[in-house]
Image (cartoon, one colour):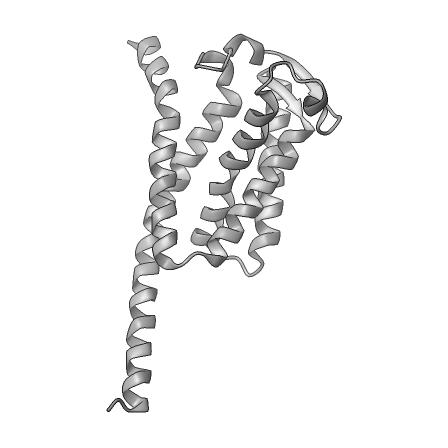
Length: 190
């Protein structure tokens, strides 16, 4: 027969194990964060220098402001443009909110993710405009911020195992995403 003290002891041991495992997650989250930043820089500021399938690099070497939200849904340049815009921007910033919460554990994770996502996206859009590195688009601000908030929600609600799994997926996807840019850089510098 199990006593109350044995149950409490088991719960404490489980909680202590989760705390230790959570501490082990932070260094991996930092690795994922560095890779995420590299991928975001590649696909937002260097996208005009690498041609990929479904991606014409030359189109992105321009200075243009798109202040009307969702206009690409009404008059897209290419049929898959709206899907790539929404999916790419949301997915690119989910790791930002997720890793932000894992690493810094803010008291208000959704609000923090919202402001960090919005601030980082605004920085990218302004940089793209200044250096003619792409479209400065209000949709990017909206979808990047949405992605960061969704990432924070995931960090709040996933189990510890789910968090480990998502960090691993972020690392793998980030490395794969950066690979074409690394190949171009290698060819350019060698």
